[in-house]
Length: 333
Image (tube, rainbow, N blue to C red):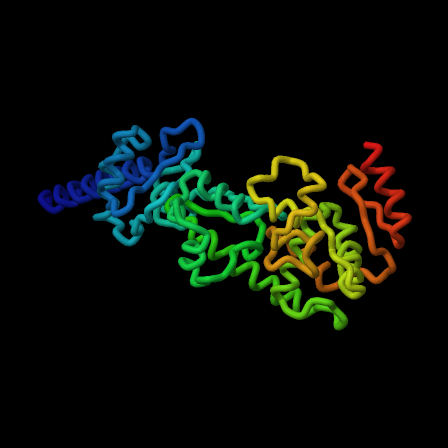
């Protein structure tokens, strides 16, 4: 009987010790990480669980790496497959929360904002300078970039939707370009489906060209449809569009902040003071509002507009009124 009691005591003591050990182990996993501020941590590509645990211990982010190694034996189902990428460790985060984070898709992302009215050249410069983006197009020509996107032989201007895109370390600039291209195609299709019936443009691509002119002419939302209306009426009456941004685009890198009378008279494929109709391609990346304006011009009688110098324009019905406005807003200034 004493032997049985002794064995029971031993079992109870062993069970208590095991339970106490379990509670201590659990407390080590639930203990907060040794970080006093948000800390970026990267799981290298191909790194296994034990390697990451050892690295965290070496960086003194965790202090009881044995507890994390034991996790694979006691609770193997709670150990996720770690995903390569950057993660943000925050003060107060527990070891269990850390392991769950490193197996999730909550990687650190970075914003990349492409403003409305930018050119493809400007977008490429932005991609080249974006931190932690895998630059695969650096050194390639525009034609080579378009070939990578499956659009060989097409002019790139205008085809990339201006917006804010988010990416994580390791994403390539080609992927950002694919997203922007797909977005522009989708928005253009939506807008074209809602177009007016009596347009002077005949295709979605012509709408893209027209929208780029509108985008470069004004940043005032309330003016976009009126500018579209002016362009429509000028084309209907056989007048040239005579819009300065096409002159600037045709000048390319020669443009240094101002255009001269000689520039207005220079015969480039884009100079709408010289050519009839619209330029052969877009001159910038238009936003949705400019695309909508291009296919829904505001009715009216105005045929001219001139900048007031504050981001808005004065619209005129007659050349005489327009010349007076030019004297007031441009020549006197």
